[in-house]
Image (cartoon, rainbow, N blue to C red; front, side, top):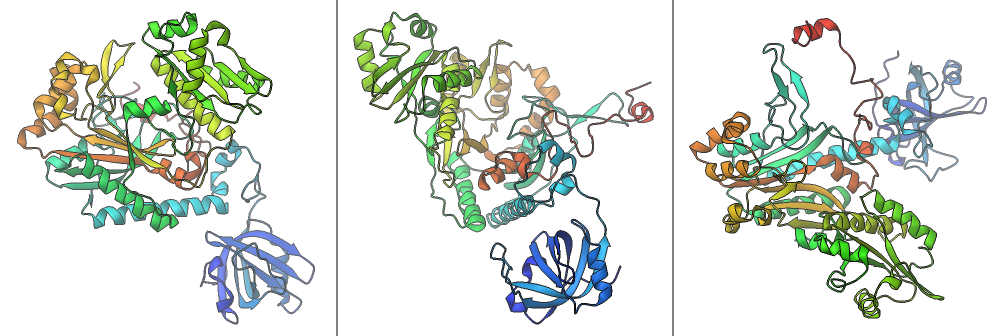
Length: 585
């Protein structure tokens, strides 16, 4: 290899450098060989630039250029000049480098797919050859943007008095929620470390230790089923603050979002964010992470139908459920009977049993439920829903959680299907006043809605004994465009209250001591009131860049079965390693 040392990245070459000698290094994007005239596009992480050879170029260099193929790694030295034919599709399409020295650094086999954006290639193939996929400009820009987002986060929190402190990766297993990933210990055979699901307990201990404001870009691990916005290993922007209430935590983080979007995207985010109580979010949108970029809000018809003789509606109401609807305005031409049948299949995914409807077309109203209701009931339903010509009403009747799940997801499905969503909007809001507990029907006990260290509202402590299901939490989720991007709470800092919460979720004093004894012990030595939150960094980047999946913003993601196609992990290990760990005799 010749000693051609890079002087510039490809995209740095512009018409200000005309007449100057430069050296670029990178991958060959394209070769156009016209005999004595050869053009090669060289690509690096910044972009690409064209280098040119002609009949005046040294013959040896021409012979080397003749051998070049796509994805070869090359270095080129030459003088910058104005191109005869300008390419307006790239940043520096008005210039090229007239080559005076050239070297092939590394040859490349023909890749299994072209290194181009928007290629029609199965994701499995791209992930198997992820190191090639990562050469694509779109992915490179995404990961560069992710880097900038993390840097801005560190800068903002540093400027606001936060200290970045690392917490351990090998910790004690304290399962509560998702399954832990376990790591066997060689030294303490039969014992296991766990990989952290979050730094929750350690950041609370840092508040006990007096560090006042903590943040960390933290790796977290959860052994759970995957989906588009979930991975077994992920990254959080994690933070905790002492001597604060809910409004303090929300204010500092609204400031971060405003700062981040202005720095990264030059977008002004309006603050303060809208705040919705959990109950209102569920009633209006059927979701505790509502997408507020479009309407289709839920309407409760239960009071109108509480004496109905229609068994489907009456049965739902008698069992403590409800009858709710959405009015899809001006959609009758699109939502035909056949399309409504498809929507019925959509809600079955969310345990829905059926979808009642009315369509108002030029031919009048066609309905699946009118014949079962009284004229007064029909009249009141249509008035409450403002049912007009070209509208379609969709109704679900069932237990409340099923109704919310069905209609909440159906409205989002229709928002996309009917192009009701402006993808350039960034609608932030807070969802607050969550229930402290949820009742687990299978285990016949209360479980924490968030985690057992979340403080109840202090004015509702008396309900812990009389009606724990009604107790609200000092918890808050930040929602962006229908996705939870961050969440947190004010923490319990009183040892007795913490033990009481453990009791309510079925943890005896002995079990609590075994799992969380170190935290309870720390609480004996003085604890400032504290609270915090954590952002899902992968999800935040995904939403900021309008990607469909967090796999698009992670360098080496896992697939649906938690495996990695490129390296073939997880994989078996040799028997001697298992014997060292005490897992095999």
